[in-house]
Length: 96
Image 1 (cartoon, rainbow, N blue to C red):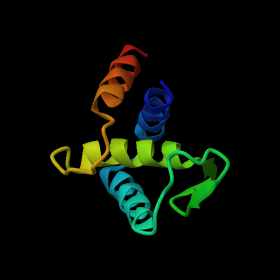
Image 2: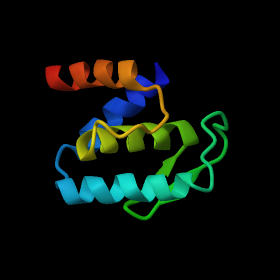
Image 3: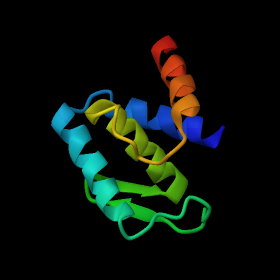
Image 4: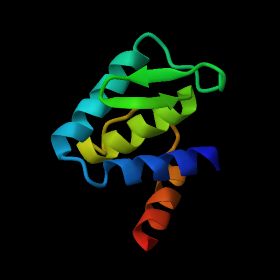
């Protein structure tokens, strides 16, 4: 359920962003991911420059990346199994 809520948070955050801003966020998280993002360490707090003043857990950041890539290129395989959670979040977002 946490991934669904993180995806919903990302959808809300991206709502007023341009495709270029969403792409930049997705790319920044992906670049950070090349050095590793631990989704199981809730205590480690991560930051990215493209979303200032916000702190993320690893799992939350991966959910943001997943949502960003759904906008950028939904066919790209991120090796994240968030499809069901994303679909549920999208359904919730569309009802708001």
